[in-house]
Length: 93
Image (cartoon, rainbow, N blue to C red):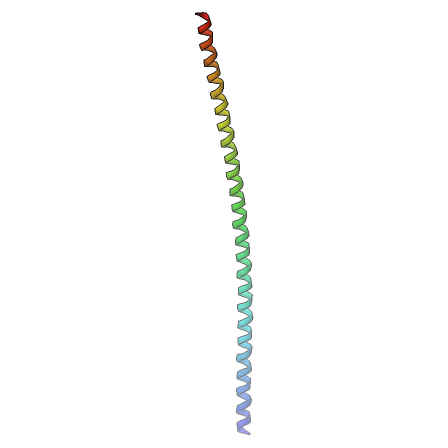
C-alpha cells in the first residue's frame, strides 16, 4: 500500500512537469509568432521606405534632366544670338 501511494505521488509530479513543459512550449510558440509578426511589420516598413526613396531619386533625376535641357537650350540661343550679331557686323562692313 505504501508503494502505491508513493507511485501516485510520482505520477502527480510527472503530470505537473508535463503540464509545465506544455505551457512553456505554448508560450515559446506564441513568442515566436509575435517575433515573426514583428519582423514582417518591420520588413513592410523598410519596403515602404525604399519605395519612397526610389520615388524621391526618380523625381530628382527628372528635375536634373529638365535643368540640363533648359541650360542646353539657353546655350544654343546664346550661341545663335552671337552668330547673328557677328553676321550683322559683317553686313555693316
